[in-house]
Image 1 (cartoon, rainbow, N blue to C red):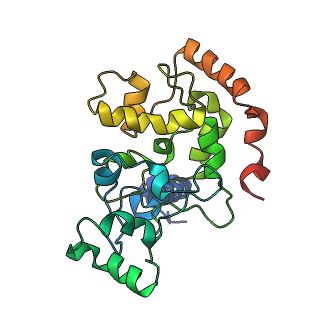
Image 2: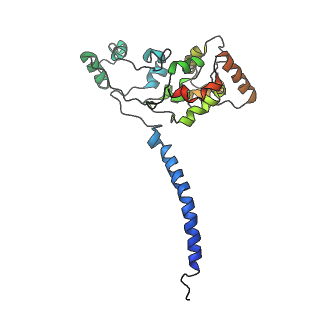
Image 3: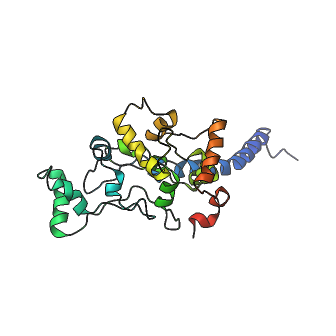
Amino acid sequence: MPQLFKPSANSAAKVSLLLTAALPVLLISVGSGISRSAANTGVGNRLDQPVPFSHQHHAWELGIDCRYCHTSVEESGYAGLPDTETCMTCHSQIWTNSPLLDPVRKSYETGQPLEWNLVNKVPEFVYFNHSIHIDRGISCNNCHGPVQKMHLTFKGQPFHMVWCLECHREPEKYLYVDEKNPQLTPRQQVFNLYVKFQSDPEGANMSPRERALINGKEQVTTVRDLIERGRKLLEERGINKAQLADCSVCHH
């Protein structure tokens, strides 16, 4: 009986089997890369807004406290957005003829609220409470990036579930503590960091962790004694670490 396949068919068969085995891995890798890319997560992307609001100008250059605009950040799940009346407390006196502020003036005259495009938003099936995190000493920059340096606000973190769980599983690594002002409550320390940055933008008098945090960079504690101190903070601030990874904490 004549030979039906050439010797090269053996090599072709082996290659096809390897490709078949590698295809699922390749597809998963590509899919994971796409899902984690900025195109999907929105990290670093600046959304069009009715008014080009600059956090750097207002929060750093002018020194306006975050809570002046985000009035409910300390007491509710939603941080809140400023209403037009809040904007006009200043802009009825300054920059009164600026074309950039036309939407604000029209909103004030007509009573029609400005429609801001939310930069940071969790899915509807996820529950997030700003006040709890602030009260325990989690800095705004942990989640929002270096917001005090943003001319136009962009998303600083991907908000993936695994990213949230990194903190929920080891919260002692992320709790902020102001070594020079230990008398302040965790909530006060969170906002006092911006006061320190305003008076010392180069960070000469800040700790390495504070400089990293203010720049929106990774500031996880890795030194053993600092981690031990973080565990003490868990007890002092009433944080039940064992409960934080429960599904019911974020998914009601």
